[in-house]
Amino acid sequence: MTPAAARSAMYSGYGLLVDSELPLPELGSAGSTGAPADVVVRGGTVPAPGPSATLLPLGLWLDGDRIGVDVPDVGRFAADAGERITVDALPGTPPDVVRLFLLGTAFGALLLQRGHLVLHGNAFRVGDACAVVLGHSGAGKSTLAAEMHRRGHDVLSDDVVPIDAAGRALPGWPRIKLWQDALDRLGRDSSDLRRIRAEHAKFHVPLDRAELGPLPVRWLYALDRYDGPLRITPVTGAAVFTTLHEHAYRNELLVGAHRRTHLARSAALASTARLARVDRPRGVDSVAASADAILADIHHDIHHDIHHDSRLGPTAAREERHVATSS
Image (cartoon, rainbow, N blue to C red; front, side, top):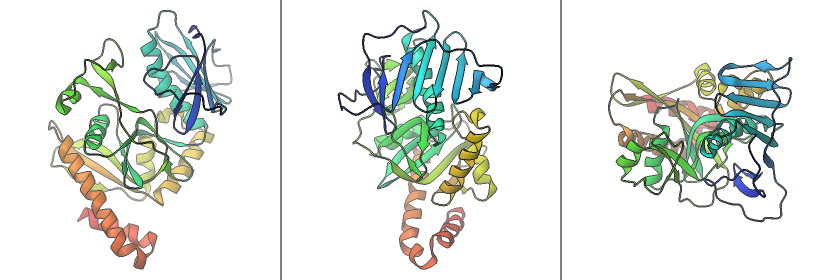
């Protein structure tokens, strides 16, 4: 069991106040606000899932209002009713490894319990809205987000992007995770950075950003690779739901009520945001070109809105934008 710290501390992220007795040095302290915590994080014993629990791939499980994950050689984590995370780490587990799963899978599960559409991607600010870049592990989401940050676009969240019932992305932890080669590309020295895990050359990179509240999602881009030039292709119809399910964070959890909530949130988001696929050439460093293409696509969409939405109405204008971006 993870030993408790001498006393808990308050942190903030995703619009939540988090009271954690496990130190979370990657996060900024929320200080003493006087407000009650939205989420409590504690070390303790997490019972094994009961006989009626639903066992899922990758060590995940559902047991009533509890979502759990068993991580080999690390321990067991459980999120309860969107309000509490219990960490039951194996003795001797390095704290940085515990935090990796706490701030990732466990918090992703808790945000799902709170009724959010939780996507696997990064979100960055564009004016008074934001864009979300989706992709599987290793697709280059974080490197692209770092490039957007370098260009002056605040990054709301890295890896876990929760979207609320109003279609707004919630700003998460003020850091991004980057491999050494990505840092080299950006000219960022890693000597002062904390590693994700001691054995990996991947680092927590603090984000210098303005204080951000939730921002409406207007654009979503799913990263992919293929044998051809870089292109952006609109995604419409049933493919929207397939893509959002594919890029849901820990989509193995989307069963029962969680699947129904995901579908409802996806339908609502599809009515206000535009989804496209970014096909990038294999074996080519296309980070800068991808950023150029995405920002140009967003600029085109905004320009098109200004000139056409008032006369077409939102649905007709959105359909016309799909045609324009594919030409």
